[in-house]
Length: 277
Length: 277
Image 1 (cartoon, rainbow over the protein chains, first blue to last red):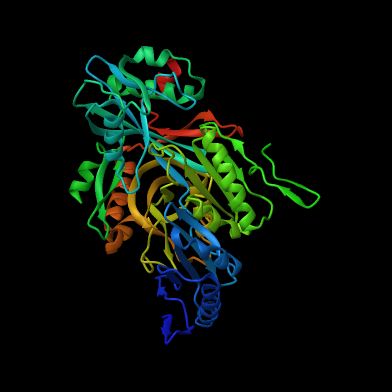
Image 2: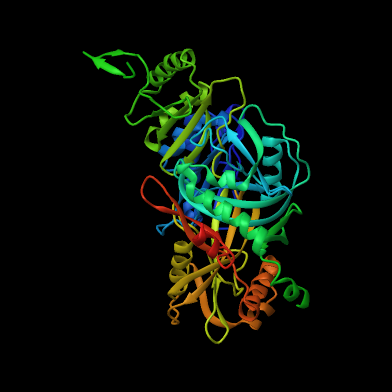
C-alpha cells in the first residue's frame, strides 16, 4: 500500500512511495512532479504511519526539478542533510534520541605532485588565479568523486603540464580546516616519476610551467605556503639522500561494483609479514 | 544601491543585497523573510545587473527558514551547490565557460584507533548496529567538522570505551569509494598509547569492549573487513617487532583564526634536514 494511486480522477491519498533502509528508516525518492499541497498532505499521512511503525530516520530525495516540494518538506519539520547540483536530500529523525546519522562529507581530498627529473629539477607551475598567483608551486588539484588518489594525481599533472607521470608513493599528507565553505581538506603529497618531459600547459588555469632546480623552488618567498614549501623541499632531499620512504598502496577490499579499495602504508617493514601470514 | 529599500510601504525594488567574492562573483546571504514572488522579481533584476557587470559565479545562501525561496531561485536557473542542516547554498555560473568552482566536499574522514597495552592486547569493541555487529573490531569514528585527526581519534576511543589515550602516529590510511551517499572515505589508522585501562562503554552505540590478544583478533572471520583486519594485524606486528614507523604530525601554517594545520610525515629521515635548513 506504499503507493499513491489515482483512480477516476480521485486521489486515494495513502502514503508516499518509500523503501526501507538498513538502519530502521525509510527513503522516499521523489521522481514525478506533484503539487506541493498534495505532497504535504501525503507527507503528513506517511509520517504518522512511519511513527506508528517505529521508523527512525526518514529521508526524502528531491531532484532539482521538484524544487517546488522543498518548502513543504521543511514546513513538516525536515532538515537539509546534503545537496549535490541535481538533488537535495532532507532528513527527519523521528526518535527522541540524538540523531546518530553522520553529517555530510566534511573533507575535500586534494593531491600535490612532486615530480623530479634526473637532474634534480622539479616540475612547477604558476596558476592564473588565486592567492598563489605568480608563485612557482607544485601541481595540485582536487580528487574527483570516486577517484583514487593514485589516479587523480596522474590526471592533474597531465592536465596542468602535459607531462605523463607514474605514481610512486605518498610522501606525506596534511589536514587543514576552513578551506572552502567551512569544509576541511586533506592534501596528499605524492612522489611521481616522470614518463615524459615536454611541457604543454593548460591555458585556462595555468600561466606557466617549467622544470626548476630544487634550490630555486625552495628560495622563493611565498608567505602563504612557506611552511608547506619547506617540508616539500625537505622531503625531496630526504628521498634523494636518505632513502625516505612514504606510504604505498595495496588493494584491500572490493566494493559491490568490483572496485578495489587501497590501503597506503610503508611496505618495506610490512611485506614479509603479509607474505608470511 | 545594493539594498532593498521600503519607504512608505512602497518597495523600491532595486537589487538583492550582495557582497563581492574574491573570484569575480557575488554572494547573496538572505537573512530576512521575503515573499517568494518579490524575491524572484528582485533576483531577475539583480541577475541582469550582475551579467552586465561581468560577474562570474552568483551564490545564494538560504537559511532553512527561508525554504520558501528555494523554488524561485531554481526557476531562475540556480543549481544546488551544497547544503548543511541549517542552510542551502545555490550557485549560478554566468560565463559560457565550464564552471571551475570545486564541487561539494567529497570525502568523509574517519579514524581507526590501534590501542595496544603492554601485554600485547588490543582494545576492541563490538558495535550495536551495522554490518560488523557481533565482530570484535578497533574503535572507529568520523572526524567532526574542523577537528584534527589527532584530536578526533582520542575523542572516539574515550567515547566508545572510556579509555584515555595519547596519539602516537598514523600507521596507514585507506581510501574507499561509495561509502555514504556516493561519497568516498579516507580512514586514518592511528597508533595510540593507552593512558588508562579500565573500560566503560558507550551504551548507545557499543555492545561490548575488551582488551583482546592480537592473535584472537586476527583469527576472527569477518568477511566484510577481512583485508583491513589482516593489515591491522600485520601493522601491529611490524610496529612491535621491526620498528615500523608511520607518519607523525608537525605544524605547518596558521589559518586566519590562529589554528595550526598539521603535515603528517615520517620524522626519522626528515628531522635533521628540517633542523639544518
